[in-house]
Length: 361
Image (cartoon, rainbow, N blue to C red; front, top):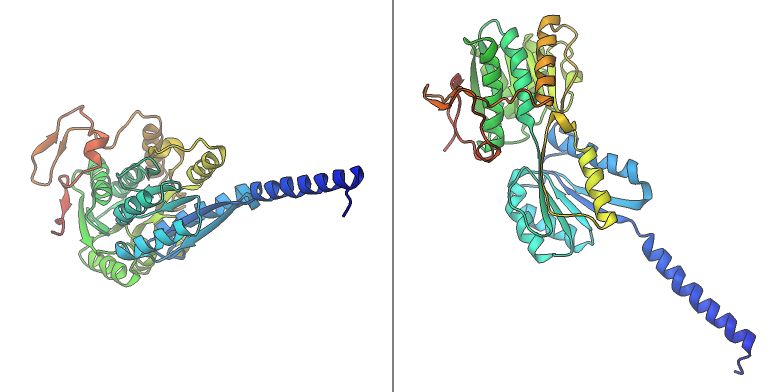
């Protein structure tokens, strides 16, 4: 075919249009974001709140992102398989949200150096692996202030999941706060060895209430303890989200985790090309932790005192782990005026005075 100057120009324009059109299409591809949850998104607790963060990412970025989540992932081999599948599927950044996902995440991160990974509550990091956590213990300290004031039996209950530093910190913060306003208060701990098991959580709640506990706290994810407390007329403190709808009369408050801002910021960093491996540990001051509204039946002076303590923590005028602090045996382990360092908080494996119970071997 004979090519005239006009047909040649048309061909060049057509090729250019196809080339740049393809580049535009490629540039418009959404960023792929993966999430791995240890529990169901309907647990109304920890995994539920992480998924609320995922939904906030979708709302904020719209069609610029495509999110995927996998729920009910067992810690261990199953987690490694799921994380690897998400990386192989082309996800640009993957958030793994449970302590037991740490080693599987670190292993897969080394195999996929171009993928960004973020692990919640762990400590292993790498060039493409960041860590993040919330200072849940700040919320548990404030809840402990209210619990110490409200208990009539001086017996507080704590339903614990696993004996990892995060949970131990929570028990200790709750106990220190309660005893700061009520030296007679004691905290009885029951381990359920699960993050989410409504049956075991209810059994633990009922066992504690049978011992005379009149305020229940939990570091497990179902609403079963709140529901059990509602039936017995006992105060309960929710976990991770506002659980008041499950116990309108019993729900005192809840330690609420809010991951939305963090997830949006980290996804934006990937889009901007500014993502770096970081270690983030925020609390009240960054709104990563907050309290659910106090029950309307909470005495005004108790609520005011608790909110005052919350503000002091937020303003860095009060640290929950400031001495003097005694361990479970009565030995002073933190001198007056000294504050436990973050490094020591992250490996905390001992109970404070006033905790009734021991850690499983």
